[in-house]
Amino acid sequence: MIDSKKIEVLKKTINFLVSENRNSALASKDRLEIQNKKRFGKILGFLYPFGFWGGIIYCLSALWKGETVTMFRDMIFEDHASKVVHNSLKRTWGENYDQDKSNLPLSRLKVLITLLKNIFIVRRAYKSVKIDHVTEFVRVFRLVHFYFMRKALFSSNPPASVLFVRTNDPKRLALGTVAEEYEIPSIAFTVDRVALRKPAPFAIDTLLCWTMNQKKLAEERNIPVIRMPVPSIKAIKLPVPNSNSGVYGLLLNAKCDPLMVAKWVEEISSMYNISSLQVRPHPGYAVEKLSIIPHSVICDWHQPLEEYLDGLDLVFALNTNSIIDALLHGVPVVYVGGLDPYDYDLHRFVADGIVFPYSPENSSIKSIIKFYSSEPFKEMWNPKEFITDNTEEYDVLTQLTGAMNDNIVKT
Image 1 (tube, rainbow, N blue to C red):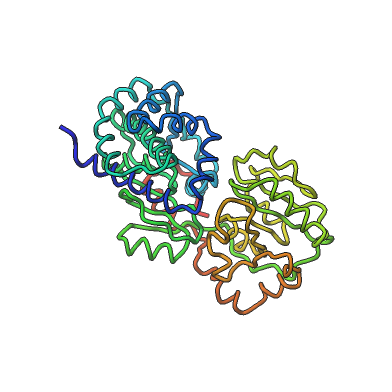
Image 2: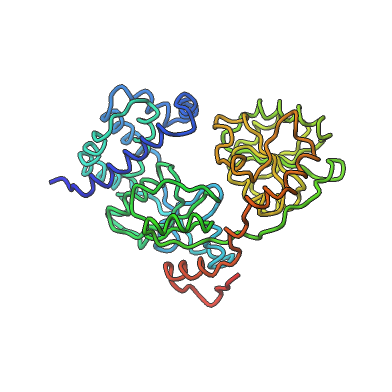
């Protein structure tokens, strides 16, 4: 007999993922281009005409690749490039917390058995939504692939809880889905510094967020929530010095177009008399692609973002949440659109009046200083939304993970 509860949980997540794909700021053709650069995208694209059973063939073929799950003691730990979970645990347990981390290999045989046992649950859930585009098919069966992986682990060795970043990545969505099926506590961490993300399609037992506004919204949804601390909150550093006496940076995102970025840097280098723009790639980005950018120094993305920002007097930025980090560190930001496939001002920082927008006609240093000195900016930028104290975070994580030793120190 098929477990209707499991079907409903998975069905919610599949429908959510397809809906998010259709409403994404990233156009289907752009997403397809990105997917086709990945091995799984090419395989699933080939199998798309075969529908559900084509997706199952992909899941079977993916068994050849061994996979591991990161554990922190008896909890699954699913982080993000920004290391939000890592940083939260490090603040709670100290620098040596990762001594309790381990990588648990998944048994291919157990995954195969799990796939065979749950294939009709997945089929029923899959049939609840009409797939209209290959990009939807690819994302759904990436979700299904990780769903089988996580179920194989939970069925034989269920974790005490799961710690993961709340994004629409199929791997993290699969983890939350399986956790709800097995009634395992889910602790979700918010990567968006100010954005209000749509509710997850599965139960969340505790949400860690950044701002008071995010906290209020979660409480309205009856989700227990606490705020994580930011490293510091500094006043905006003014006046902005000219480049011959100051240091300017550029924050890139994962989807930046290196050719367009290089062309733009060439354009602004004479405007601002820049000879060595400090370019920070997105974590994990293939930095060799950025070698074409002129008048620049490509920084190491492993360097803590706080250290990078502390050395700047002004930073240009594409669509990225790191804009908020820069403002919190007192660094004036100039937003640059059109250098990635996203919509202009994706996060609405310009529309909200907290970031100066670049334009070739009106982006002088004098204009930037005037913007960040203005009363409208001071009214819209509210650092009081954030906290620097980690007491809330410390209390909830020590309760969830248990007392470790006598070396725990509050910051």
